[in-house]
Amino acid sequence: MNRVTDKAPNDPNVRSTVTMLIFVNTAQVVTCAGPPRARRGREMSNLETIPNGAVVVTGERIEAVGKEADLRGRYSTATEIDCGGYVLAPGLVDSHTHAVFGRARYDEQEMRAAGMDYMAIAARGGGIHSSVRDLRTRGEDDLVALTRPRLLRLASYGITTVEVKSGYGLTLGDELKTLRVIARLSSELPLRIVPTFLGAHEIPLEQRGSAASREEYVSSLVNEMIPRVAAEKLARFADVFCEMGVYTVPQSRRILEAARAHGLLLKLHADELTSCGGAELAAELGATSADHLGAVSDAGVRALANSSTVATLLPGTMLFLGKSTRAPARQLIDAGVAVALATDFNPGTSPTPNLPLILTLGVSQLHLSAGEALIASTVNGAAALGLADSIGQLTPGFSADLALFEMGDLRELPYWYGDRRCLGTWVRGKTCHPSHLRVT
Ligand SMILES: [Zn+2]
Image (cartoon, rainbow, N blue to C red; front, side, top):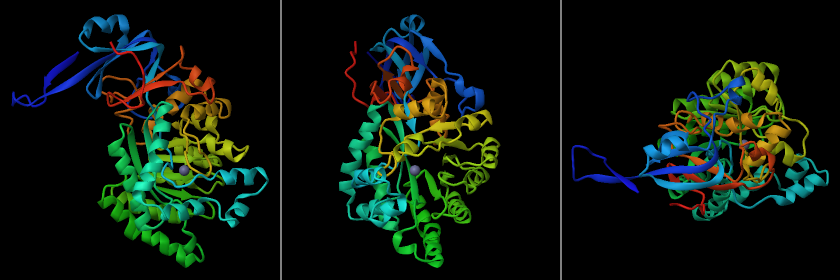
């Protein structure tokens, strides 16, 4: 049943219909409720779980969360959604993807298996530059058509918010094209999409030759691309790949300071393969997140602990590349750093849309508890996007972003590894991932 409310109380002729839903018949509602900010240290283990809980949604927002026995009577006119005796949780937040690209790069996986290293693959025309060459040949419509099913696949695993980066264009025109693809899909799909400008993903091949031409590209990012991206409001974040042989710490600082001056929030690919001061730079600049951190130094861990920067870990990348190094997740959490988990969905190093599988790696390889892994992919994923005050937890007033999982206990989410247990998701109170749930 729908509740009719006045949208403009001064004008009785302007009325809108607001749908009220009540999610009932759950094994448990996991709320992740708590302060509207990143969780650190022991806070990361605090999942609030309500056995036989219910959630009431009015329009786009959560109205009430509690025991079904208490809420049913109070909201007897709401439309019931039968959760089938399963687990209702906040929709998952994937805060790091590179979903806009052209062709897949499965051939490189075989080359790696045969013992070829990154440089040898690049010499054969592989690696990130092959994705750049490919994306530059494609039009916007083509890229929209390629990216749409990928985002729907991500959503089908329980994701309700996804960050998507540009970064395979590396020219003003190709980066704007990529960001417009993200903007089109953001307005078309019910999924919440957060766009990031990553013109500093690599230095384009044609400008790698000399220090002077590399600096020229940095100048074009600072003076041309960032102002244009900000003016067209095509990105919420700017990001830089700060790594040996890519962008140095001084170059990264220059790019990010320009982005900040143009009103963009900051992210940084930091200390992925070598410890070069990326985490320290992210903390110093007040970046919203520092991502990867496979080789973060002790000084980097301390810098993050003393900052509000979220450490986003991407263990799928290391697994897929067959590397044994891992980000020091326990050291980070024990030092008081807020840790998030994300897929790093991209064609070269992590082509998986399965965020629950990343939670499995979080538990089995990074030694997080199941509860910490869930906070890392809900509340802290939201914090890594600067959205912890509106998504990531089931709390009255928050956006009605929910995911229903076919299990009796949320700890099964990282346990059934590789499986897809998501039965349905809702974003802003509307069905996102199709579900076949009985509505009464
Ligand atoms: Zn990345």
